[in-house]
Image (cartoon, rainbow, N blue to C red):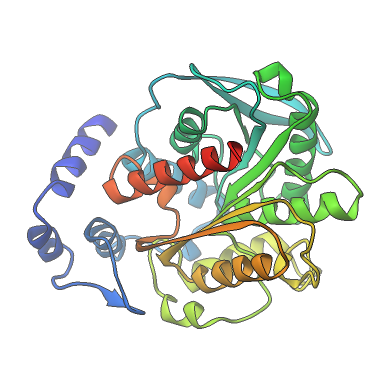
Length: 343
């Protein structure tokens, strides 16, 4: 049944843009000087008939998200093999998945990657397609982390798992054909939050910086307002109410939103952090804070590449099988990573 549904969806999404927009409420979605991709417009329109994530339990949200992602994710990347294993973590075993391309650069660092999901939903399947793309184009091994989720494991449990997985990956990089003792950190959305925090935590701990940090539509400030929070408050798939639902489960009543481990943009001094690739999506409540963090990194002397994909929405790394522009963006991001490795 899932294959049939995916075929039907693919057929609809291949319709000419005017027809697709007509099926999506008509007209062009133009906001903040940006035009939404017609396929994301279709998904946003279709989602109006579904229960909001805010009305679901975390368990229901995880199941619904996993089912939805199956319909929009791309196929496994050709020329990339993967293996699943577990490592010791601060709260027990951490499932991880290692991706290795057929053509691998043994001088490149291992990339440890954390998926999106607000710290509440998501697993190794969430970023499966993207990790394959990243491994093949960047020509290096990628280690995806299935960190603990809230509300069963609130902040900082997920972050602690990613920190543990990063250190393990760095120390075991050669096992996966990467440069011995060399690792980079990456993630999208909450995973991007973890990646930004990790670079800062390495500095605070006196440890070597990651080879680079890849921050894809990162949540870097959960304590402050920005214009895009209002402009895209009702956006798909991440709206302001959903963000608040995530944070309510993730932080708990005792957490301080201004804690730099929750809001890395609150760290006053960013000098000396790892080179950064910062990516944002145009139709995303987080676009302003991602851009602002990139500008702060640049001002602090951190080598930084910034890209905004104006027509795309938050979470686009999961839509490689349904939105051609999302697939193209993911491949460009992987090429930016390769360029960083070659510096």
